[in-house]
Image (cartoon, rainbow, N blue to C red; front, side, top):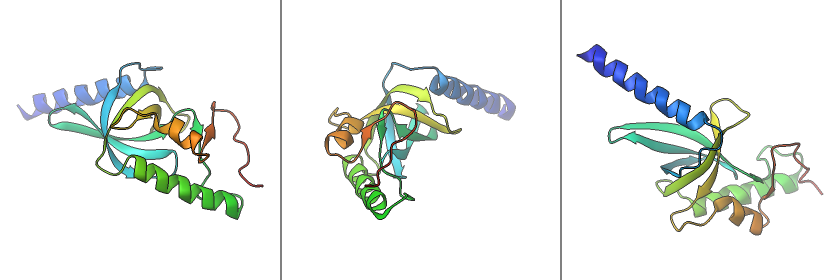
Length: 145
């Protein structure tokens, strides 16, 4: 019986992995913020079954925020502001939705549009507040003046 349960769990995990790696998953996936990493990346718990959760690292799609280990003081300071703002927008424990999920160029992370509990696009907010810039996956521009 234990072996059957383990195999069932493995199947569910594999299904989740396939779901998260499908190009441009259109369905909005509910998740809960686990912790903030930087201004455009955080970890979230996704509920696969009533008793099965996975934690994924999420990079907010279509936005680039300054790096915490940036090239100049301005970039580092802006990165801290972006990180703090993201923590305000989606604090730990917040229910969010992930949309347009794609595999990220860095293993173990996904790119997704992120919608707060009020339905607002978190990436768009960061861009509108000048804490992030539109990003298409190419080479990042410098934040240093």
